[in-house]
Length: 127
Image 1 (cartoon, rainbow, N blue to C red):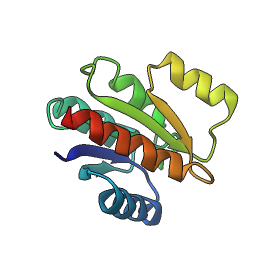
Image 2 (image 1 turned 90 degrees about the vertical axis):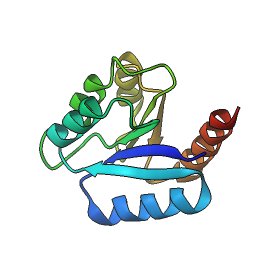
Image 3 (image 1 turned 180 degrees about the horizontal axis):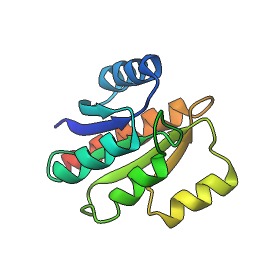
Image 4 (image 1 turned 180 degrees about the vertical axis):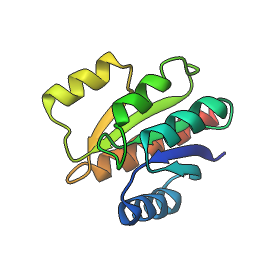
């Protein structure tokens, strides 16, 4: 089973490398991407049954990932939302937890943890 994943990331290089890595190493299948808060909010709410995982950066070309996270607050329990950011400070992690985020990963040093998280989600999807 593939983990249908939507990615909100405004840096094209990071986005493409992330998709390549996760699709190669895990069961992640990218079903869409967005570069702005508005694009992310719209896609996630208009395609509520078409994703299992959303990966959201906090600092976007327009708007913020916090607005995208807010748009996910009424998601189904099986749908997971994670943050991948260069600013995964204790304050940001706390704010994300308040918004119902399932996990927060730092882009600079927690990519392996992100891959492990996705592999765990793949395993849960099989069960």
